[in-house]
Length: 189
Image (cartoon, rainbow, N blue to C red; front, side, top):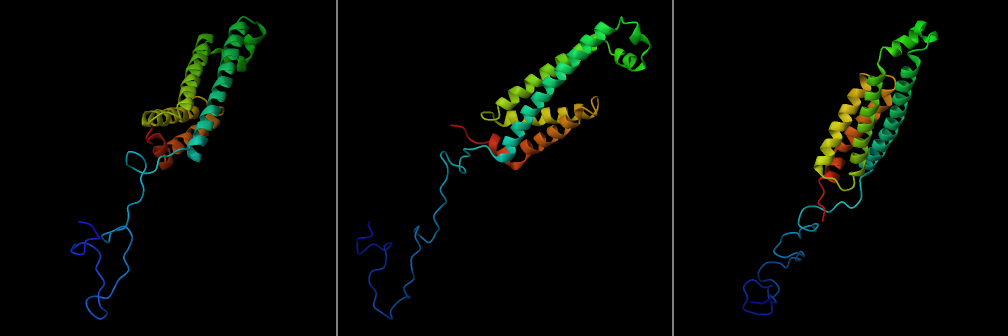
């Protein structure tokens, strides 16, 4: 059946005489009275995200800032460990209360802090690099990383860790919001 067939009951009405039947109504495009469906991306779903949202990009930049702060912390811990180890035998510093407070930490413990800071920096580098290609697992891992970083910034390193805490909270918020979820859950072809 085609619309050209005059006997087609589903085709457009043939010319009617004036005054008979229903008045002529304009036909909506799309057919059968239903509106046309909006276009969809490949393989169904919504449109495909091609560029990283601004909040997710800002979170990635903040991760790189955390990496820089971690490297600075590694240098400070290593310098502190080497200084404490070298100065423990100095007679002038044995009566200094400020040094004795620092000397309560063993140089091995300070080297342990340095090693932990290196591992945390490497973890932050891996997460920051994976922002472009990573899926929802990278998003969840980044959220956990940011929350632990914020907690560690509060307790042991209150003054120095304040910047870490603020950056980590912002990373968690930016990665955990709707834009972050959309970016990390986007289809990859």
